[in-house]
Length: 204
Ligand SMILES: O=C(O)c1ccccc1N[C@@H]1O[C@H](COP(=O)(O)O)[C@@H](O)[C@H]1O
Image (cartoon, rainbow, N blue to C red; front, side, top):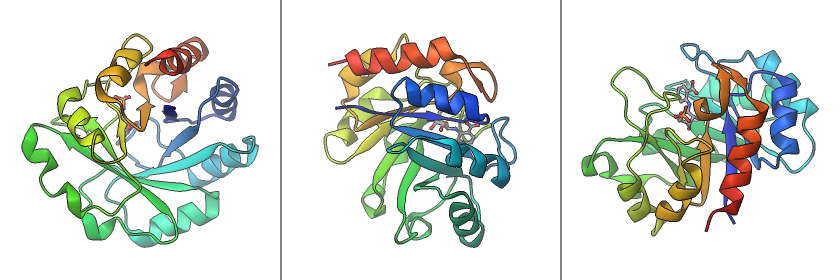
């Protein structure tokens, strides 16, 4: 069964709509340079409004461990997503589960992945000017190779049109989408979110 994460929520109503469509996880971005960045207070209000059995993920880019722990505790987040240049030793937050994002640009981007003791690797597209949320398509061939060995969450440029084919080719543990289901940066389009989840579930 494919797990689906909708990332970059900034409003309670968008988050509830994603849950109503069957999202397994919701991502909240704590990176000031992102157009999807939320304050701790906004994130806490979104988490508090969610129904049970939905996993909340806090996304951080090169943030200090102390700040990450503070935010995770304050907001009641379930999972930590590290989407910057964090090395293996910076990905340990017991007892929290961690997703480490790798921005893939060729084979060498995956050198040393065996050193990451994380719940899953999230494979995103590489972009020269941005850490993520760019809508740039990832490398599905490399992702498929890694997904055969360990849990991989596929991200980067997914949308309702390509998500089923991506799942067929890569066979990931889960998929993650941000810009591909937006009406504008930070706001989700209800029809696109519904179509993304429907098409992902219909894959395979
Ligand atoms: O969403 C952002 O603004 C963001 C900023 C910094 C790092 C990661 C970010 N988002 C993550 O990027 C990938 C791919 O996004 P997209 O679907 O291509 O728009 C995804 O994991 C987002 O969670």
